[in-house]
Image (tube, rainbow, N blue to C red; front, side, top):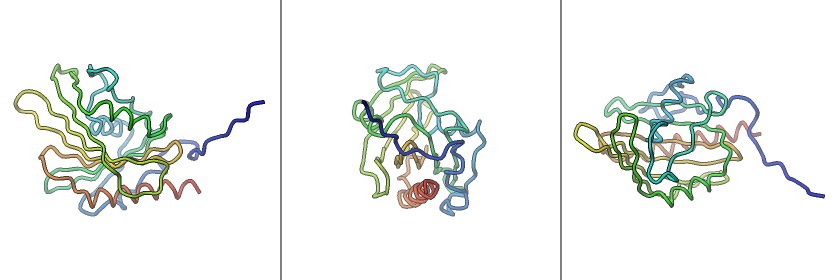
Length: 201
């Protein structure tokens, strides 16, 4: 006889109730909760790689964006002084964070060609995430640099945690080459993880 254990899971239904409220973002980043269409676009933006891109090596292709609104919800705050953004997302995912971290280790640098035929180079590195109450966590520095003139480099710092099958991600993004607003990003990340925990009780 085989005994199976059931993993802890988030409440059933759309993940929107788990998302950090715009009112709880740092005030320097006035935020709004995105509708499903805009949420999907935002998730692809912070991922840095378009859906239809040709990735080399292919093993570095990112996982598909979860279905919105059932399995993904997004809020974005924008700093009016430099147009940098903090994006907070909650995603219901089928795999532990360790799978993503393993891919990061294998894909410190890779390229993709987008639907516009522009070739870009992605570089990514792991760092230690701030202490957080979660099953697993990681910080990721990433840059996406298109070839040719007229296209700026996208730089992101993502703080990611996973609790059961819910992944919480807070990402600072800029095209200005400025240093990430790490303190305020951590503030949003911590609040976002606490919001998820509150809904698991």
